[in-house]
Length: 421
Image 1 (tube, one colour):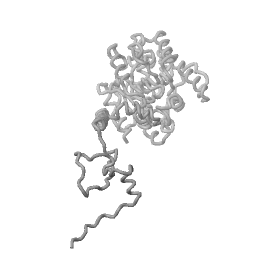
Image 2 (cartoon, one colour):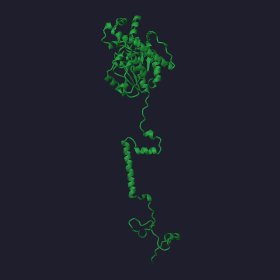
Image 3 (cartoon, helix red, strand yellow):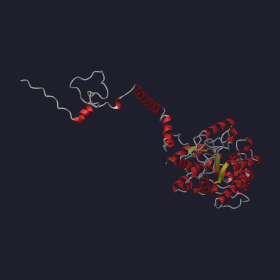
Image 4 (tube, one colour):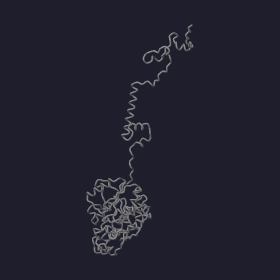
């Protein structure tokens, strides 16, 4: 007896209504349409399937958009690496979005803030304390980070026109802020189209300067070396031991004009008449002091000079007075004292004073201006009125740190050794 095929149970009425919404026809097995290929499933394949997600549908336009975005990203990354930074349009977008660090991170580097003035020239006068100041400047340049520019030429103060142009060009192209120092007569930068720098200088009593140079060339100082023999090897023994009074009274070339006309040309300039003792050179030197020199100090009041330099040029001289008063620096200063220095007779001094009358007129003028400047800053002057005749200042060992004459080669190697120690 054959078994009857079991029929599947009839669906509930609600399910029947869903399959026969119209009440009569059969339910559609694919409510979302015929599957791909157009073939309908066979018997027993009527299973409900999940509809495809909309995100999985890609058109050709969507595919092109994705590839274009990827291309832009790659090109932007390439430009970023080749140009050293992000593309300009990304920076503009970043700025538009309001990022406050836009200019800080990717703007142009800020320009270096230079002190004012940023160009200083110290055309140091020989035997007027410049060796002490240069030693201080070497310490200060490392401390404050300014550019100290020196020269390998130490015995040429008068220059031709071409030499002036070349030196001015070299100075003007130095990294700022700079301080240039050399034994050289005043240079007019504006005459050759350059920016005129600020000048500073120091002078001293003219007879004192002359005596210091006279004995230094012959006998040197206390540095423990025969430096005078090295600098003046051709000097004959009778000239080396020539008595100062005889040199003055007998009118030797070294003790007469134009050799005695020494300080004024440093302020008058490179004009040939600046080397001729007279009113023209004197007045021109005064004019340059007023118009081009920030400060002309007096060696006899060196501490006040350093104090004013610290106030006028703090970017260069801040803390200079404390360094100068340091005991270690004083010990170095003792080594530069000129030895065997003697005082000439009153008769010889009076002759020197007459021969150097223009030098003294300039010295008194500068000293008056310096004392006036000190009073403006509340500093007291040691001498209220200029003397009727020179009062010759014979320095003590602690106050005679002096440079060498510009006519002799400067011992820069010794200065470098002292600085390194």
